[in-house]
Length: 640
Image (tube, one colour):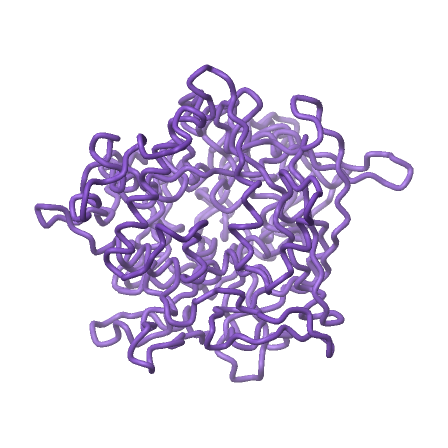
């Protein structure tokens, strides 16, 4: 992606420029100590920002949860610095990251009955690198490329790849919370007592980019509205970090769960008092989560005419050519809902293969009220029984709400932990899938008008009021699941057994992470923009965009006749397998071929050529175009 462009190719956006044309250097990380102190036990964060030291552009320390929960029980943390911190506008020096994780705990705190340990991840990581979404010229670039290399002790580069590290602060709170004079629609400011704040109230107006002053005014209006409605005094409390009261797993770096005065106490590790206060000012026990208050509240807000301010997404109307005929209506709904807060109208965080097929956020996650219906839905300051009324069981995936009597009685979701997965739509193959079962929304054709009928277009059943992600029985394309022998599981009756793990920690062929071949969660390869930074990694690895499907990326030589590749794949390309080598296998186990090539060998979307190919078959050349389903009759009579 060219610097400053979004995935649709629009831009560049010079949103980090000052009125005099110079580039504004962000001060975001300079406030990290004050803003995020509450999210660490008392006294911990200041130790990483000592007085008198150069603390500019240092990231937040990231705790080693493997050591804490699976190791010696002590608390340690890694802290990274912003690239170029000691030399702006100079080439970034190679930085060494040696943090190595063998087994990754994922909310294994005993209170979390949904967590698990992903064993054997065996990855190096560089957690908490402070970044900004702007380049040295002030242009917005939420998809910066990082060069990641494995280098041996002698300095020899063993492997190298350029990959996107997404970062964006794009949010559009100002659409409602800015005053009309600043471009707001007035919906959230008309009920304020007194005049709403404007950019003129920003003491740093003209010393910062205009977008920053607009955000300052919107934030001021927002906290005034909160004070007005809830009797708080946020306007005189700085910095204001919503998650101090409204829990989010995203900032629960040590996986401790919601904290507040109700469960506060000293942090004692191995008999040593590390901190006098674990909660350190957090007040999350009596308040709903950040996800709940944002999604559930905004999902019910109406405008002056009584219409939903954040509309529901209309179902896709997809014709036989693969075109979503009501795409613009759906895109407008997306920009009026998810992209008000999540990156966003310019950033377009949903930018990969699913986006190419016309799917949008709600097709996987459900509407705003469904997303907000989480484990804190019954929490409140009063009555006392509502304080700490968290629902943290492991039954989320097993309890869809299929009838009106079920609504509100099943296990709700936990944000960042209970999410739809690949298996929710890729429920199997041509021989065994959930396509066509009650409530499923089947993808009729792909974006190139190839008949589908196997994959789903929606990750949950239409008759499920909770939008519970589908968990398939055929795991060919699904994430790993929590096994009974997982270290986090309490016994054979533990309800989390069988639950899917997240895509980002799931592995497949020879233990390789799914992301290594398919790309990041919302940027599954390919990105339809040919210049997108997202495509660079796959092109470097195999010579073309899309899923890393070329065996030669990792292997040398002819791999023979085997179905031991990813998802039960055979060797692809011009190989001995394609040149007659598969004949014996097809005769003995024709269903293995039918799984992807179709019940009658007619070809399916699971058997599309990943790139233009020329194959040799009994002395003749067979040409396949990228995206073309491979059939028996490309080379010989249909044997299936």
